[in-house]
Image (cartoon, rainbow, N blue to C red; front, side, top):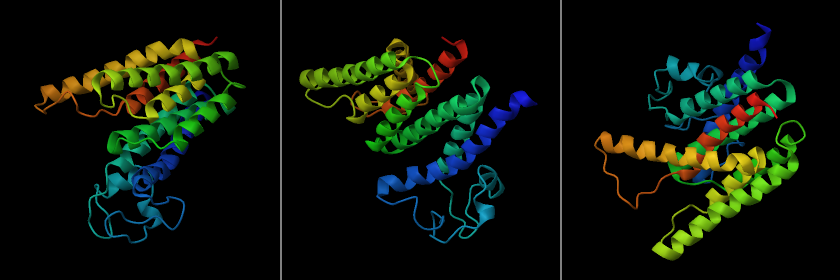
Length: 249
């Protein structure tokens, strides 16, 4: 049972924080704050009671519809809550104490990146900045050493910025979002430079897999369709960190 203490505790904390982060993901693009006022129904704006705010369970119990007005509850709520719960659980499996909290924090922020980029094609600048700052703090508790992290941060940003710059020069259109190099640089401050190539490769494979799935399900895919590459980077970065911590120095 002691082996499950940290996974269960961080999964529970992740689900609770995920409820807040889901609200952030829904309100931030609209210019609204998730910190002010009571939690309100997305459909009618009425305040929600405590029983309506239990992570995951409320969504299941209400069958995806608001108690007050019957409006459909955005699926992003349970998706972010579940993602943060899983990220916390996995962090607790590979570490405990402060290292586990830092790893989970990285995962929770990446879930928010996925939610925003997948739904809005938008990663606000403060988000990579917070991830980067947390990566520097993590150097006191987790591998790799600070020097490798700094090199990773510079290499991550520069490589994607250069790819985007060259694509724009050759094709005349934007090929990468402006936040993608910043996010990859922040990821480099967590993983160090050695893990950047496999993360980039995995992110590309995730993107190709999603495109292939869309094509096999009959959805049209054009060459200039926008793809949330930042979300793919986030999905690739977290398992890379978990594996690196699990294997050790």
